[in-house]
Image 1 (cartoon, rainbow over the protein chains, first blue to last red):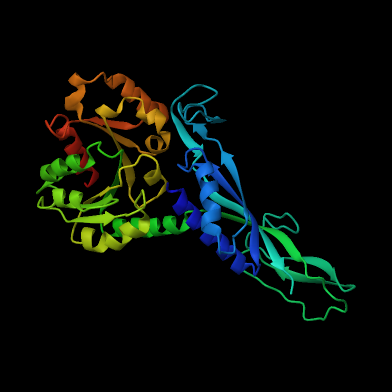
Image 2: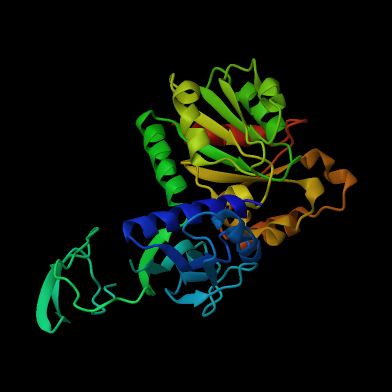
Length: 117
Length: 267
């Protein structure tokens, strides 16, 4: 259940963005989670509102974009999506590949609300 | 990206013209850092109390604070000439026992140190005491993994005095620890023969991250329906090119190759 630690780190960052942008609160938080990041999107969805309570991220919607794994083939140079349970090049079948995507755990953007005074 | 003009928006400044209260003016701005701007002229009309929504692009790693500390740990280790490996496996795969035998085997050859993590107790640290290496225990309490800050705090006292090789024994868990960079040189995944040969495919997150895998408890193979070729194939399915050791810390089978490898890491 390290999704709780992830949620804590995420809320901290959202609060920093809200303060830096002089906004009142976050309404929506968009993140990217790779299939090999070790993070379970559903568990993170569950943890986020609990951690966000009482912060500038309270009530914010969490939108998770799942990122599939991609590899670059070191034999033929092709970049292709891959099965994480059987990593290989989709074009030539070589197993000599380098992981290009799939470990993401990024905040992409935050929708901010500023209450006018 | 600049939300006004869609430019790629690095540190280059540029201007946007726009209209306020019937007059056109422009602001120069850069995309490199924070900026605020104010309009000192009064609004002649009442402003309704509505909330204004806008979206800002962030593009940051969620664990950036951990990752930054991990980079500081990495710099410290490199500056002090320490090679650090992060050992990750299920609970009970034999990490601590392998470390006991490894410290004994490397005693007098390589100056080692250990940071070991568990939810509770310092049992592991006590098992590893008296083998010529400084050992520190981290009790993570409710956390399922070590983080870079916990490790960073201990580095000077545990790995300061001429240590060449630091073993970080993570909390027994195949999922969570692999998400947290501790500043190690690389991860080593352990897999015991009693866990079944398809575990790498069931838990690809860790096994795809570790360039080295150690198959432990090889002495039990005669008692198990465990197929070495199938296990190696499963490891290579998720991590083509993985370097595999097969050993038994109990009987000493395969230990020489493992110890030689560790000695070479520090040369």
